[in-house]
Length: 210
Image (tube, rainbow, N blue to C red; front, side, top):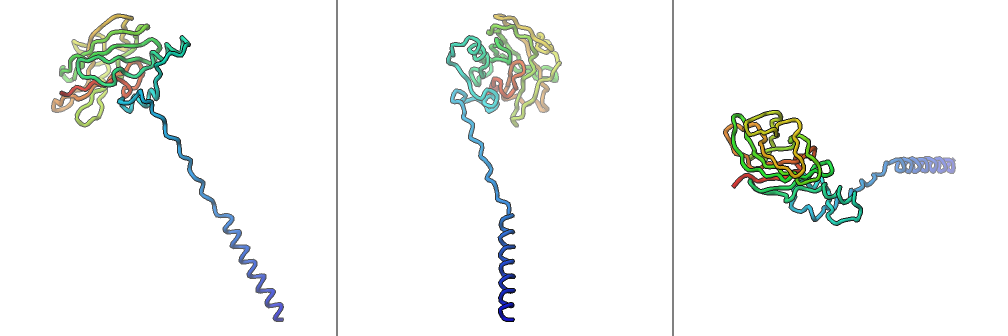
């Protein structure tokens, strides 16, 4: 009888150990989350805004020997220079090969219910520019960009408000872009412009204050 009791006790003990092992085996193991490698930042984009860095990622200036690749590279360049002041030019490229304009804001003034940014444009590319000038913004003290008032027109517009602005290769023109005027008459501190469908944040920056 004593031997039977010992055997029964051992059976219960072994059953308990087996249950514990089974529970341990079914516990899910945490899988380490892979860490994405840090993106290499092109040193040639140092000094540019984050919007330019995000859009262009990296730039290439050295000839490859392949004519098609080299011309694509020539017309896919960030604004040069990265920033300027009112009255200074920045060269911009677009999304189509051959598009390149030298852009110079010459004056910022209030025109009725709008703030007008007067511009001089010169087509320094190899392709006729035929696109609207819509990728533009003014910023004020709070840093929030205010987009263009599409379709608004003033005496200074000179076709810059049109759905398509045409500028032939080697030609120059001038006109103005109109933005909603802020309450209180606050003066803008920054103007941004990009060509075709390049994001405004990847365009040239003109610092207007001072």
